[in-house]
Length: 148
Image (cartoon, rainbow, N blue to C red):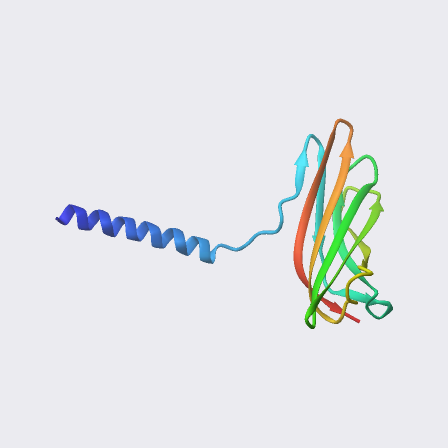
């Protein structure tokens, strides 16, 4: 009986320790794609800015890459507006410098949807690029504030 109780207590302590690590361990940033000499990273920054009374949003990003050709960056924004949803997408091409660079991608609202407004929105960004004999992509998704 004593052995079973000791085993049960040991299992409970192990489970509590693992749970504590999961709760208190800091969340790290998105892991960048790195393979065969290709490095790609995209980070969504804040705040996004309204353009033309909500017809579009300028989304700031930080990209880091070493692709030999220009990289393509795709961005989508989704925002709850009253009882509907405003959504849109944007695309831009950038040259790589090998270090972090601040860029902006304009995301236009879908013509069939609503205009963007001030407030929180979900922004998803993807960077795609190539070096000789290898291509890759990396993504980031964040909740950001849209301001005027």
